[in-house]
Image 1: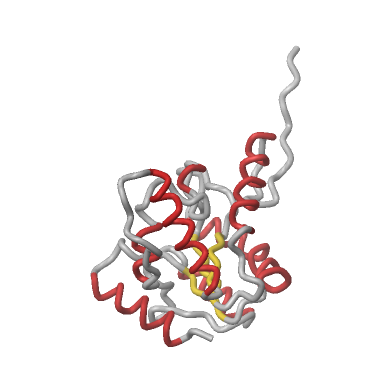
Image 2: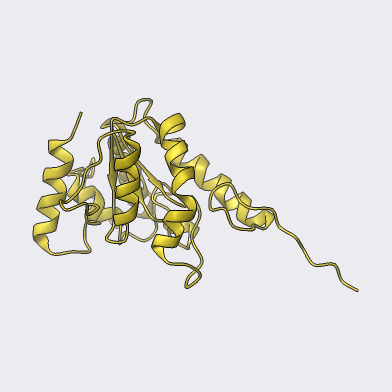
Length: 200
């Protein structure tokens, strides 16, 4: 009779995790730590990292679907003209991440690991992982302000405002800031105004 494998919960997402899952989380943390500011001015918080590790923001991401609009919205340009050479593109992306760090920005996630699809709603994930995120922000990140990103983080905004860890940037009416590149153009301006107005 075969024994069933019992996995311990992952510290990053709270779900049972294989050794491979844990190794991927550690790798993501190592990548992001390279670009963590000593003092975080603005902590951006999104729901979860992408499913593919190659698309992680701090990799730098192979897919530019989030990376490029986000950097553009923050008006962080390439250090030099981007050529067709992969090495040049990689170097340019690293320069953007370095500027992101220099400005005191840091991106983290409610879940430090990709969340499985169709298992729970965003609100359920927030209810389950919100207290852990609050502790991370209070005792680890200690930012000057927090900027939740995404249309599904309304309940997270309320949690962060209730705990009064730091000022929370919103798009008004308790809505999280839009993820650049996913909404109407006027939301891009709203994103920039909110981040600039709240900049330490």
